[in-house]
Length: 153
Image (tube, rainbow, N blue to C red; front, side):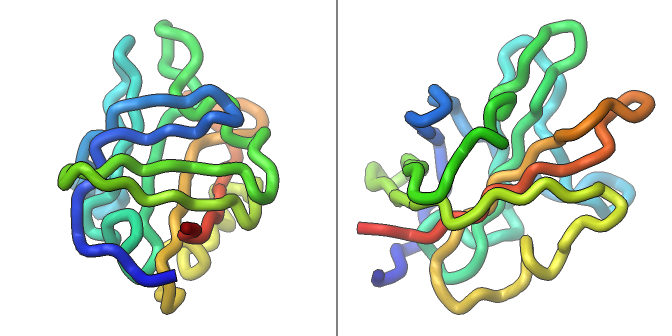
């Protein structure tokens, strides 16, 4: 599959789990970690702007919440239900879209987050979707749910 030209994602659709959300841009938090979308009633996903755009070579990273505090369920509340071959579509700023097929879903302890697997160079266009998961731990969750997907026609 040929890589796409750079174009920022503006919307994300995941039909298998009924997600259709605007996508905001995220950078780095003051502590150097990747920002997460704000906890708001109008919950949406966020693309990490220091990663490739969807369809470019490398892992494009999009994050979303599983819950949004007092507002209830987050945009990625059903992310762990995705299965191999489920489709994900990133709608891009230039009017095109990038379609991906899920290749795997992993739940890992946040203390053991697989940074290289998520952000490392893969030599082809891929997508990572990330949210929290597992049991609650203090103000958050113990685990991370990571979806791995590859660009498809």
